[in-house]
Length: 336
Image 1 (spheres, one colour):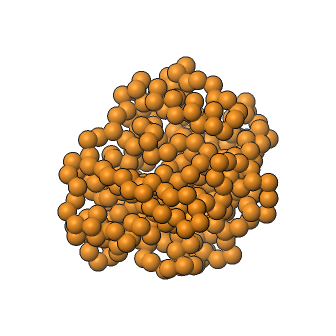
Image 2 (image 1 turned 120 degrees about the vertical axis):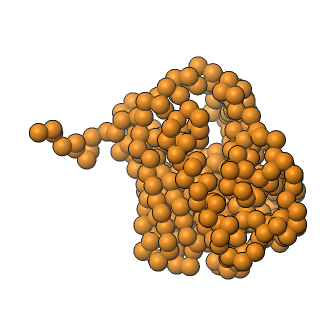
């Protein structure tokens, strides 16, 4: 009889992810430690990898706006339509307000990889996407980012009809740090306005900035958990500053909210080899315990970033189809 696999045995990296990482690694510049320098190099790396892999944004319609934020810097948003022409006002399309991932310190809607992802999702799901270019830490710190993201959501709702979208078919979503901000927006909405949100889409989200739910069991032995935790704490410090108590506030760590009742239905994707899987899966349990409909899926053999590698990693293609399928259901929800 085969020997049962120990539940403590380290999982195996997907061979397609290993091949993708092997192709990409030689193209990357080493990132410096200082945040601004790291941001510049990371942006160059995104350009380089996107060019090498043939990643290019679709020629779909888009438009930018600047949204004022009370007490904080304005936030730029980019609206994406599913076709090459702007949807006519009053079309009633679902709309997803999305927050990019980048550890609160890097990335943005101008990165080729993010811009391309928004365009293909809008096209494939037949929806409007509004992507918020929230500020980077440490130049701007909490609570600037959740307030910017809340303002982007409120702006989208106020202008939904003229954008060809429906305010009754609004979703929010985000990846990694953007997942933290998306979940924070759902709490802010419950506390402030109670507008209808039909879905929250969280992809490998960071939801507890105390790192109390980080799951290190899936990390490769070459990257000890203590190193991963140290890197995570550095990013959290850049975002929150030196006051560690801020990490327990619900708009910083939505998983630590005293109640999750009344939040929108959720689709949560996690990856086996990602320490943040503990956050996403604990949040799924918290939502379910609060009576919130939730679907959570763990992708075996995947890393924190590999689900973005559509066209190269089969699991990433599956994740894309899953997300698009869920977004398509928004057409049947709410009133036009």
